[in-house]
Length: 328
Image (cartoon, rainbow, N blue to C red; front, side, top):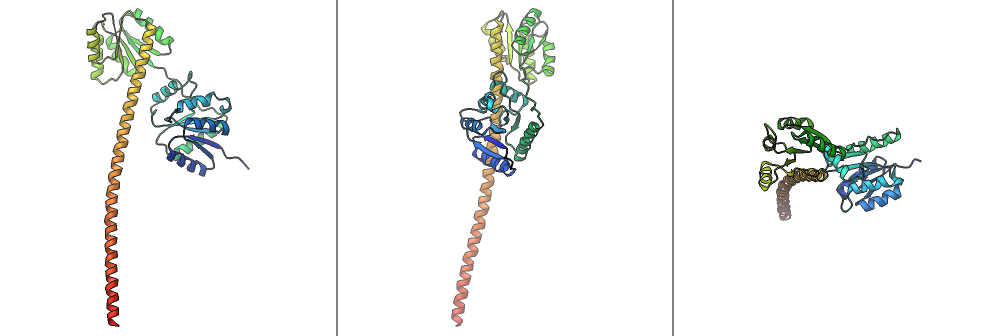
């Protein structure tokens, strides 16, 4: 008699837990559930499941911490992790999420699904993971994507210095020696941030910044200037700059400043995505409530009609009974 493959589901959504348990249980799997990260880790240690289906947004200990703890546990090295998430939908967001929740990119789930998860898709993902394990294959890890920095400056020495510093810190760096060249690099390179000199011949930094904002480029921009003053900062921010550096500046501090700016911008975009998602959910709920109200009105109308028929039947039977008694 073969033992059923054990799958542990960690999710705080009780409805989702019931659905997954029912669907995968019917397919012959042993399905155990946990409603939070702490409980999930305890069950993982005792059950040694083949697969952990892990929600990202858990109360208390989130999915990234759980994922890291599982990866650090030598007793669970054979356990695959299938992460489900309603937040990190884009490839870049997924990679960055693993970076933020990882120790040197240690935390990498074996597969990702976006909520709402279709049960058939979930079952196929489970079967694919198990098939890969039986064939002795290791699921392809998600490679860590480097944040991209575009440096626009007509000072070659400054470009070389910044390129060396950012590259040594793990950034993907590209440079341009003029404003127009910098604009040309935006589509081909798709930087996460741009460091741009204020004073350049032909097209200065503020001119480039104005064109970028007019064309809708939503890329954080750090203005570099040797003419540090409040007026320069105000003008830069008015044009849409996100920060500025006064030359000469410490490149190590600049790296930290840029990294914080990239993270802040990424979090802002994620918040906007979540807000938009909540708006859509809210609209959907309103539509459903309206639909239920219409259905309720129809049911009330039908009930009143049935009740009216019932009263008519009672009167008819009463009248018929009286007539029959009168004939006797």
